[in-house]
Image (cartoon, rainbow, N blue to C red; front, side, top):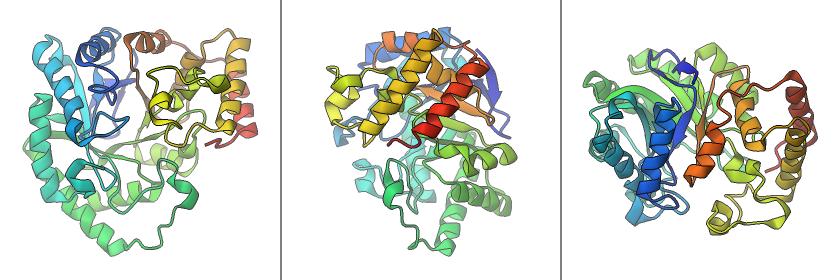
Length: 347
């Protein structure tokens, strides 16, 4: 397993990360622990969680359950010292978490103490802000995104307050690095600017959606990523399961995400299914597995990407891990580019 360093933080992790958002809902604790064992055995030493997990759906009674399941593994496994943990504080899109309210410096202080207990760790290696307090275009909100009500002075004051708390927590050894999620290019560079002004921690990574069907990172965010040393943690690298091919021809397998929530959060469109078929045909033409091709492509982008693997079952995870060393040929990469031009942003 290749390894990489998170921006300028000095923290080294595996080039792939194991996502945990199904742990405690679609994936029970025994299966979750089996997945962590499999990932560690394959060389993955990086886990990503969140205060609001599990999802699909998020429920008041399960908030924090995923962190508890990860914490139980950390308590029991002799290899827990080999693993680095990333988690998040919910923002204004947190639903049942704090009644959907956002966060400030004081909230972060209170929240992280509970998360450390649930995770059974003394330090969270990467602490992420799950949503920008000012709003976001993530999760299909870009079609009607309106930033006109934002106030830059309010944003700067909020950032300075949060960075002050994160700085204190870093000094206390409770945080290793600081990251963002569902963030924009402007927001990321503004956080970097405010960290330079206040002396707070610098952004080490941004966790945004990125996959063959959703390539918003490819332009201004890619430029920021390279020039500011901010890697992408890509969530939904398989487009919530679309890039497995299991939803083709109207299928919705029992227990799958689409069978539970219907449209994969707006991703399940006719345009998306058409694009998936084109990628599936390309993979077949070159003797590749569609899942493995989709993940390998991310590791060959011209900016730093750490895909977050997500699986409901150990069998799904094994399929992903089997492609860990796959390197795509120029012919395959050219084919992917052609499909992207023919089917841009299909959801």
